[in-house]
Image (cartoon, rainbow, N blue to C red; front, side, top):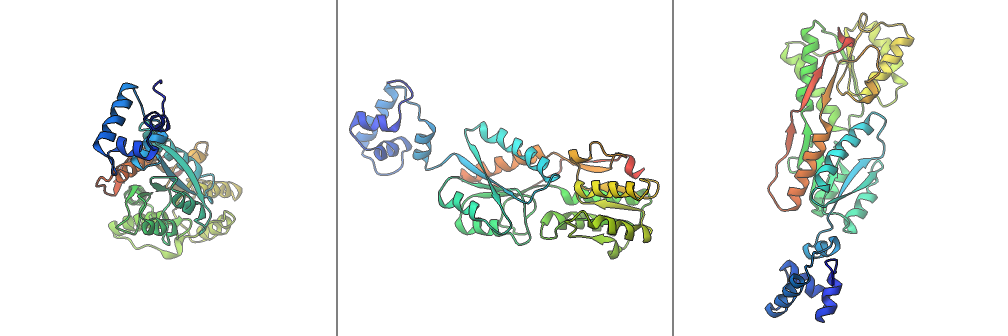
Length: 331
């Protein structure tokens, strides 16, 4: 026999069951000492190296983890998920673990349930956190190890997140220090925890500066870019100094609408973004924004989940790997 022999080969050669071979290799289960010695002597003699299936059987693991994406991601989300996935894959591939991707459509978590019920994965990474978080609630109940990318309101859930609060507060504080006092804020769904986190950072900057937030300048749950035209008209009537968008899709639409309405940036309206993706690379003028290391975020999330699967003690982490990039749009 060569070194590619399987548990089935070992079982047939020794006249015992595959389950017995697996238990002898793993050291788990009831196996007589004589039988265990025979198995170990055989695999040593034939230079046996367990293949992935045999290893998984012995350890009662699949050597797969699941990564769950929301199926409503848009163009601005995709680069984030891609960079996170690169970081995750670099970690998992180095230890012989594969990644299975599952999409969640709204409240339909049937795909996630199949991964769990069919025992296809050893753990799960959720790439979005919600106020009403059905995927996280399901995973808590079933007991499968999981980690979320993003802040969670549940202290019992292990999360790995960029310091979005600190970053958004710092960018807003810089704009206030530049003399801007009437800064509008445009953001997406308030069911996404990231929206609340970014808003909290914006608000904290005003509080630290001793200024009150002008609530009529806050526009949340803006998920249709067609609303931007109406919002922009309102903002110009309200004589705002500038506008911060919570993501690049909104920022790009604001810039496009300003061009159509002949509103000069930054002379008449200063514009900044709480996130920086490839969507803003060719923007004119260049946009003040926040840069995050999403690749490292994914890597840390994967390392944390693998440690959790191995039964190690892990804690939630907030990564302070961001930078404020000041560009032409706020000069």
